[in-house]
Each structure stands twice: as C-alpha cells, then as structure tokens.
Image (cartoon, rainbow, N blue to C red; front, top):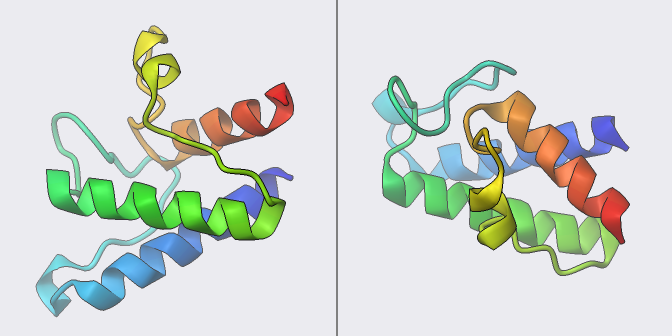
Length: 97
C-alpha cells in the first residue's frame, strides 16, 4: 500500500506542477521539505497539493480522508515535513479504519 500512496503523492505533485510556471516546478524526493524552513511549497501550493492528494486518495481507496486535522497537528513531529513523513501519515490513517 505504501507504493500506492507514493504514486498518489507523485501524481498530485505532477498535477500541481501543471499549474505552476517552469521556474516553480517541484521535484519529488523523499526528503523534499514541504513545510518549515527550506520548504519548496508556499502556503497556497501546500493547500493545493493536500487537496489534490485527498481527492486522489478518495478515488483510489473510496475513503474520505482529511489530512489536515487535529490529529495531524497533535503529533510531536509534523506529518507535513517532507514527502516521506506525509506518506507514513497517510498509511497510518488508512490503517486506522
């Protein structure tokens, strides 16, 4: 399932990149920072990426997952730090139910 999640994130990133100009395109890397110091996304791009990911997750798994939630902000380390932590957070959410 982790590979499926990784593909969803990559597809969402490709969709986001279609909306960005050539100088703003983002490359996938497990350690690519999504939030905080050195982040590759501004706040609007982050919201757009998360929205696309949620839509693709619902299409793939038939479940309405909200990635930005109290749970996401109550953990010690942000699940939005980089692609690797985001993948693990999504996997954990899918395994909860």
